[in-house]
Image (cartoon, rainbow, N blue to C red; front, top):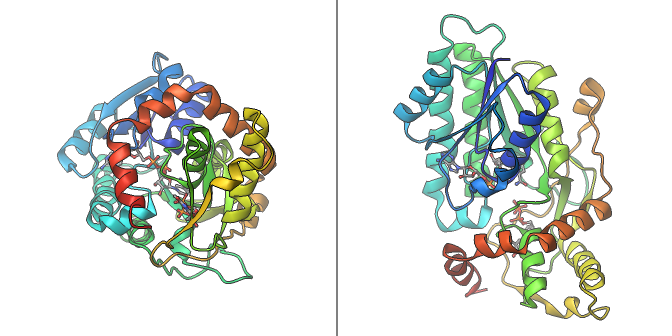
Length: 350
Ligand code: NAD
Ligand code: TYD
């Protein structure tokens, strides 16, 4: 492809994907389209920002005229769409922001792609990056398959499910060449410390309380972010148009067990007494409508595209902790300003 627009490239997963694509495809122009909300940070891409095939455009995907002019300017053959409001707790406090970016923003991008590619859709691809949360919540057994009925239960997952339906509708109605991935929980460097793992790492460093929701029995399936970026690259280039692919780590952890493992690894790395950080664990009021368990069946992408997760969780977690310890300035910068207000507001009544 000559050029690919990646939306949300200044965020957590987007920055890993942009870095991968810029380095792996030097002949392809990679355009990062991002509004730079609280979650977007160009510092995440400092190491590649001067590469000749990389460009940044500050665009809010809710603004159709800004989107279409960026599309006309760069004339992409491919779009990989990650820009979103992505945190469930924020979606409970402010659902409308999720409707705007995740639903209206996605439809704006689909309309812009349709307009740009109206004379010839051959060789074009619109890849929508979604989540396993659209499938709802599992009990103790079973896995989400691509055919599992959607059953979103938080404003975040409802907005992502809605965007997924629009993506499929544009394939069937307007023949926009779409493809979709639904991934489980990611972790790794550059994740904003509102999400479980980096929030706990940050609090452990500072010896602050570790707020575990409810009894800590909820289960998530964790995948290292670079494995997700590799899967997106593969599906974008080799997947079948009109289809969706589930991506997961085969790596289920109860929150409380995960937080304990984090505490153990960090006590060792920080030279603290064994058990010291675990004493910071505090059980707090549960999240409203808290989904019990997510677990992905990723056999389709394994069989059809030969993708597998590359890292053991303990190793990925250790790498992640090392990154945060080596990048304390990044952590300090993203937690200064707006973050303190967010944290107080989100955790004060728990
Ligand atoms: P993130 O919150 O770290 O980053 C989101 C990015 O989108 C930021 O750079 C932000 O500035 C940008 N953005 C937000 N609103 C925008 C707007 N209106 N216009 C343009 N840019 C905007 O998110 P993430 O964790 O990297 O997730 C990326 C995508 O992957 C999302 O679509 C999310 O639903 C999906 N996903 C995330 C996970 C996960 O565990 N984090 C798992 C599966 C799927
Ligand atoms: P999160 O990282 O917000 O991802 P998601 O809700 O999209 O799966 O949360 C992961 C799990 O950790 C989820 O079950 C909620 C729980 N959690 C806590 O117990 N404490 C916290 O402070 C946070 C942010 C999450």
